[in-house]
Image 1 (cartoon, rainbow, N blue to C red):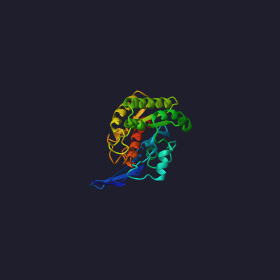
Image 2 (cartoon, helix red, strand yellow):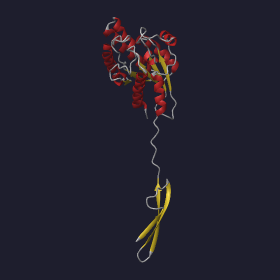
Image 3 (tube, helix red, strand yellow):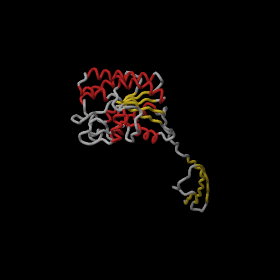
Image 4 (cartoon, helix red, strand yellow):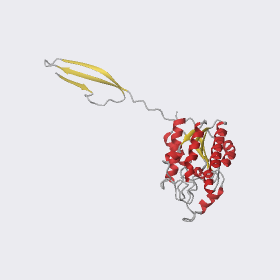
Length: 274
């Protein structure tokens, strides 16, 4: 018996309806034919992911600001960097390497049908007590849906200059808690980052041994509040490597700022993605 079909067996069918006609002939040359319809449907497209918020404020110190510092006795600061270092006001001059800029790019790349605002409200040299005092003004001014809070390095650094460790760490955690509650009272979703590691022996590695216990207190506090942790310290592997922390032993490198952005991005996806 001979048989044939049109379109031929093995042909690709277009999306939609295709009529297939087949004819068969037996040894006595008797023929028969038939036709049938093949329906090809396009595979459903996965839904485009979205976030439930698009307006973010990144609040903190020079590590939010996006400052890349060097040691004064090994390399001269540029005049622009010197002005940034002493300015001490927010918002800071735009830093292309800052984690808020990196985070904005990551959000735009994944959530292509949304437009994001990520305002950098870093303030170099700030301690958490001053941050807690200034946060209400910033929230009123910027009106965010989400607060990204990463602050406390300067509180810990004071231990390296003789401040009491328990007092500094206790005050740091208390002030972060106050900031969380201040934002939550306004309906703002809060993410809190742990502190970055410091490198012992570097010109600004002031209190590296106190970063771990301070982060333990931050994690414990955040777990008891309506906030989400972005564990930046864990993203660094708990190590102030030269790849992630710059020559001063304190401020991140380009790659280090990307790690911070990545930690916040992952936490944001888990909590806010629809």
